[in-house]
Image (cartoon, rainbow, N blue to C red; front, side):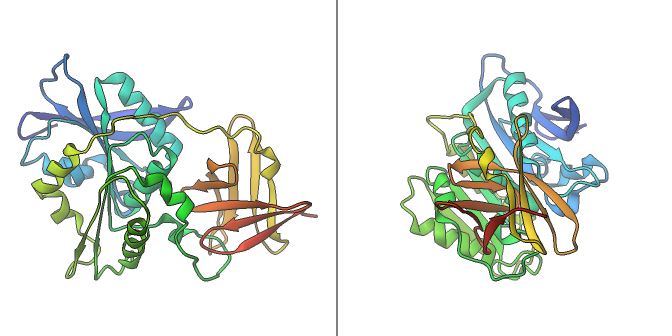
Length: 328
């Protein structure tokens, strides 16, 4: 399939740990210059695009813009298949690794953008590898910790400052419709306010659409000013290494009480995993990524471990404090 202005788009299949992962749309200039390093744009779609034909992504993000304009960049748009819920950060990291090996990518100009569910994915991927990207744009989303589906029905706590300080050197553009009834605008407004209070070393800007509901992306991605801004951003010291999960096995266990709890499991190959249930009592499993020795996060929330002399507590950052105990 082809788009206007000398771009070609093809459907590719990514493999992660010897298993099929995401299909993705690969968009590239029709005539690649072998002597040139190209910027890379990773676009993450929303929940409404899960399943079905991947070609629907032609109408979203950079693919939509490319129908009328040219971007001198390589763009990839992975697709979440039916039966999966949300973005798997480890698989996205693996996909980026593959693209960097396959193409001549300018590692100082790797950009991350997404809408709704994809906006939360953008935030979490950037938190996992904040030194890998040159800029983020987060549309109709905000703080992922507001979505944590723990069975514990308790009031949310403030944004975790220690976590979001990891993004202080990343240029960020937040956007949200103020009449959004799918994901409330306060998710983004609160995050923008908290980020703005920190001592940032990079630009933070926001666009609030007073009359828009959830879909702001048609208008946002259609503006040339956004793409000009995006490609102006550079990362002078790109890094993609990951922090180690070694020496964290002691955090494994059950936290809460025998009627309402979450579990942390550990194995050498997969590291730490969070096991919990959502409000409908469905069992969920998420890989945990370390930020500091006592702070970890996954796709749905941030966890802080508070170690005392003979006791460990787990703070689900936006929710509550759980005591470690032994089942049975």
